[in-house]
Length: 176
Ligand code: CO
Image (cartoon, rainbow, N blue to C red):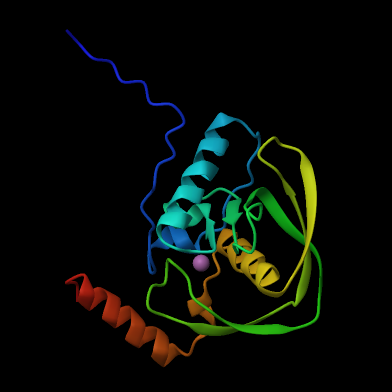
């Protein structure tokens, strides 16, 4: 007898790629049609973000160069955002926070960003939506959207600190 397993809605944790993987430095492509494939990717990204205790994740971080992000700063039960083709349409003020990134493990960088942003995006049903954000949510959205343009928090650190970090990760991997 053969047992057939049908796996329903199996959100899977994916592997997070880390600096200096070149996929993290590419400009990601727009999602042209919102269908099951992109929804599955977004669900997997949520699973991955929660498993690694992050508050945001962008598709390039799981090796997919598409414009899709997830963010959950966990202030409430309904804060999860899954965004397709997100775009900052206005911004205001200045906010400086110390940021970390799952793709740049072990590094914290003070980054200057807008304090308030309005982001336009498609939701998982392909509906055009807008969100106004400030504080940590605004920072998280800008951080994730940066990933879609190949920008990382490490871009803002000094050459010396960057070189030290690169050497450290290569050493940890047994490379020279
Ligand atoms: Co990041």
